[in-house]
Image (cartoon, rainbow, N blue to C red; front, side):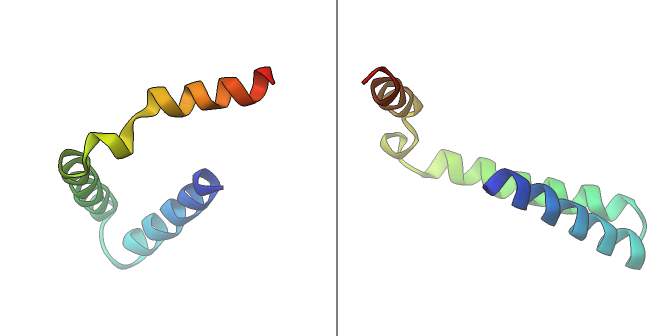
Length: 64
């Protein structure tokens, strides 16, 4: 569900930026958001981002 919402919000924010500023501001906004995401990925403990365990649990649910 987050994927479609993110795509929708991306188009809305980009359209707003382009309507009120130049098209470059959409890229500046995206760069700012990506910097925050990268910093949060470095700060958040790895135990919350262990994707291997999540995929194993999904495989177990599918196999049972």
